[in-house]
Image (cartoon, rainbow over all chains, first blue to last red; front, side):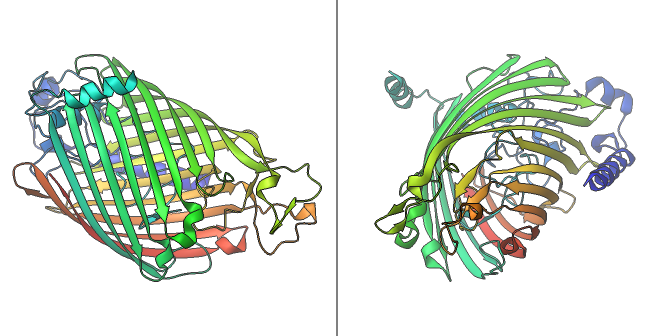
Length: 147
Length: 372
């Protein structure tokens, strides 16, 4: 068990440090350093929550999904847990409707809307659960039945 | 009073109030439906629907349900309904963040499995505070109640508190540490009995139950970071320990398909998950996990000689390994809708001290969801 943890951890860190991080490829690093907010990952998916949603998920021209999979509805929202003072996006984005505003707020509170080791029903790891959801319970659901 | 406030919110929406819908249809096949050595093959289809209403920018009221149908074991088919709310009242400019949520759901099975019909109530309050741009803390609590309609033997009431810190270290590494403590009221077999009570229909297991409290602590560190511009990963560890489970003896569940105890275990786990957008138009997630679990001892109705108290209780300790792969193809539809076909595969291998749970299982699911 300890060996497995050690090997996996070292491997992950090695890969992470060897690979360059996102937008630093070919960018003007001095400009980027002045403008880029602190990297923050509250939902544990490995992507910067304070980046614009389009930067996070290039597969669709939409904002990143919130904790329930529903998409936020603004590309200008600050999507960190709190307002991290990004200089790239407006501080108080305007939302066309309540669902957009709520999706942004919910993403800020994703850490509080779930915890990782309670007496829960046990289906936080596996397909259908976002990778940062805790991934520790170890249950599985087949159709409506969860183990 | 609370009802009056809720009614005011629901019927006094502001001008930006709106409704969102979500529908889904999934089909799948598994070669081990029960996740035990019986290796039962089955296919299933599940339909889901949800509607979410946003009367205010900080409140969501939701109503959802699903209906699952199984091919080979139709009695297992079930329907579930759920109603809930989530409130996040403070604005983005505040360093303090608050969320309050609650839900009620009920699951109903066919008549032959009606003993597993259950109702659940969950409520949660969480507070978060940003100390610095790279450091945030959180504290929260949750209360959950599970009630089985046919018998109280699987009922649970639990209260949990948790606290965590999220810090960014060494440029773009996110380290998250969470602690938790929980207590749960449950029904245990009274070990002081010299023999099980006998009722008009034989052994009366329910009459041997008494109330007890289970205490649990856990700690879970998590490291997450990007791997290049289109890939993210996390490594999550968990250690959970029951403080007073030595005398716990719950009624017949570990071998029951719909066991109320199958998710109650102590032990440790490590998981590595990766999500990537490297393949154009696709979102690919994969994960591998390792668990070492010790379950509560169970008294299984049927087959045992209950006259001998020494035979009360079956232990179970598992070593489980799992791997999964999920591929999504998000497609924007209409102005802000999302159509999302998916396919996912999952493989589990389990070694157990209880021979019944030495198994391997494979499942494949495909489906589509529509959000608008």
